[in-house]
Length: 408
Image (cartoon, rainbow, N blue to C red):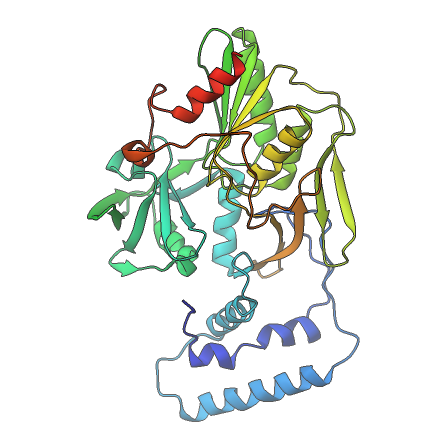
């Protein structure tokens, strides 16, 4: 479904073009994040001239602005709000599900989460492949999990307002706004059942890595997201497992929606020989950029990587690097298939834009976008177990298969 665009948004649609063409002369400093990040920021500057298209857009915008001033009787809307709405509409018109404009407040929220903490209820929201429904995944020990939210619950309403998959960011904003202790009402669909929850907002401290010994020799490291200092966290957990006698390793990136590409590259580097290909990127200039491992391997143990249909983006980069370099097997289900990289740029007013700028390929140049990475050993979690937020070790058929493969 396509969003309805308010008249005043259409009117202000080209403000950004005007701003970029005639005002912005400063070179912006960008944070690099995939899904959130990419290196090599682009310099935004003043145009050397005004094109015929620019003139037509400015003239059209001016006509609509005058019409609003003369005839519109609705509530007055702040000019900044109109501009933000115009930019959102402009970027949405690209038809790319991953490109988006963020207001200053939204950008602040994204940066807080990337740095490792934010106010909220501790659950991830994500649209399905058809961009039709919003699935929920609660974080461990979060208000959402404690209240009873389960993996793959479908979001229906937040504070009695329904949100379509194309409005995920709006729902997230409501879940994060306010102060610690505020309550938020969440309605979900689980199977054919409708459930209502009241959640209390807390400061959520994000933990990207967890580890455990699954038996005397096999260690398991779970990567929930490739944000922050994930590579350093991984190294610390790996060394802890080594001290406990680990001789074989399972890396779990199931339900990992991605994050910072560089973190995935750094972790893959821990496993590979120096100068092995990790990632191939192509941008608008169609030139290939090849990322290779820079160091001798830190991890020398046999390895299995667990993947599923919600392993996306940076998770797919890591999994494909392990698989195609012959470093280990993949067990589980074919991954999500998000094979494009977004570049985030922040402007001086605090707002920002995320644009799809590159496609990434596996080390052997296989396509990932909309296709995913296929496991070497396909195993599903089926029936009622698929909806459980936490599986007991003996219930986790994918984990059990990984253990079996390592013991061969």
